[in-house]
Amino acid sequence: MPASLADLVNYCDARTRRLAYKDAPGAFNGLQLANNGTVTRIGAAVDAGVTPFRAAAAAGIDFLIVHHGMFWDMPRPIVGPVYERFTTLMGANCALYSSHLPLDGHPEIGNNALLPRQLGLEPRRPFLVRDGEPIGWISPSELPREALRARLEGLYPRVIALEFGVAAPREIAFCSGSGNSALPELRSAGVDTLVTGELREEWFNFAQENRLNLYLCGHYATEVHGVRALAAELSSRFNLPWAWVPSDHPL
Image 1 (cartoon, one colour):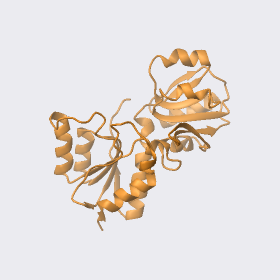
Image 2 (cartoon, rainbow, N blue to C red):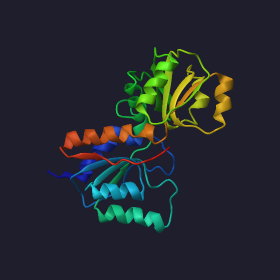
Image 3 (cartoon, rainbow, N blue to C red):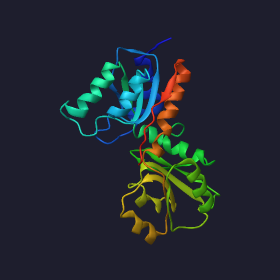
Image 4 (cartoon, rainbow, N blue to C red):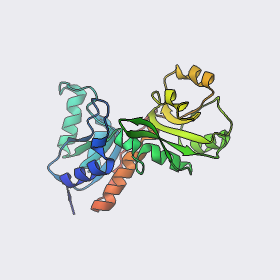
């Protein structure tokens, strides 16, 4: 049976605690584009773009959850690729729901809670707290660096390891996507090991000088988890099928 778009949006807003997070000004978490009000098939993707939208349309998806939404630099004229995004979704009657920081920091279905659980660890301490809400999490660990690196390499297609810290870290911090804001807060959190997606080049010297262990697993690759978890939860609650919309994303 189809479900109401409004019911799915209300569930997502409450589950992700959307209003609790102050995100980047252009993030615009929540429903970004409506459909005719009825949902029959749920989809999940990391990015809002013409290619994933076309794949979602071809799969018959009419409610697509993304981590990176459409509106980072609005206002923009609705021309060119932006026009294609809108017409692709609207032509397929596909609503778009975006959840950025709420699906990074959520303690159950957030990227940074699911990342340590993939490694057999549990998120215990908030990390990167912004306006009272955590974006990342810290997990106790008994994994030596070699075991941590091996587990990550078994999960992610490309892992860059910068190992300048202790050989057996007692805690590991997790920050999916870009970890640039996380590095200056590691020492104050009492942690010298970070699993993240990507970093700017200048943090290499910082890591050497501050004796840090850094594991870069890809921006896209570390942010597939939250949207998948939310889509699967919606599927179960509303008795609707869901599908992953993959991307050959190299980063």
